[in-house]
Image (cartoon, rainbow over all chains, first blue to last red; front, side):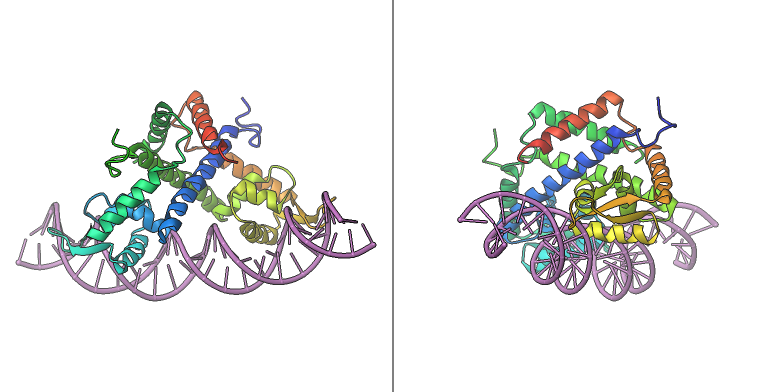
Length: 145
Length: 145
DNA sequence: CCCACATACTTCTAATTCTAATAATAGGGA
DNA sequence: TCCCTATTATTAGAATTAGAAGTATGTGGG
């Protein structure tokens, strides 16, 4: 094992995986962006609509989008201006707001999901491989949380 | 198959994998950032040093870092100011520049690699699982390129 | 040889995302 | 009940990243 003697030779798989993850992320982004372009909205808005499967708080949306709450505010502002979502007072927590889709928003979201599911970047993998990938990733993110 | 009738129920694995990829990417970033913080440089600089395994052009560095060339210029400016790299004229192509590490840069890079390899986010996986993951990702990014 | 076109790097601008600070509310313990 | 701390959403400002344009050089066809 050259673990200590030659750090430049070590961690090959690490670096390979890092880069592959990065490249695949870009591919995912490109897919989302192409859908966004078809619909005339931003990629972030597409992701937000995808995650709004039910009434949730802005904080919960930020968690689902894996971004900062301030960013959720930003995207919600735009979705609200377009009449796709509404900010309602939360029924039990007066600090929070409940984000709900308007009828227009519901239609939009259905369209978004349909488009996202066509030509998915995951298509090259079989169903079994996709589950395999998911399990590996789950193991990786499960630690320390 | 509910492929067409209910787009909201479809693509579960797709969305799961998207999010897991995103979360793991954040974990990778956090790891790089912690190393960067230890060394008092930015995360992007850490990645650049990691990829500078040999004299390459700025374009090649951008490819390896999976970013725009303009961004490579940005990070190279800072590394040059710190005396870690030099921009030399390319031996055969006068448009290009050859990026080479200075002696200080070499030492720095060795340190970076050593730190990156300790507490790797990939540690939860066995060697076989890491290869499995790499193969799946390679299949995914191999398409259409 | 000359021209069109592609590539490498840089610069500038715009968009995106994060960080820090703020105000309002929740929840738990003295 | 009254604090004290944590959490929610928002705002403002900073930093990072991408995108488009500009300059110089390489490459191949006429």
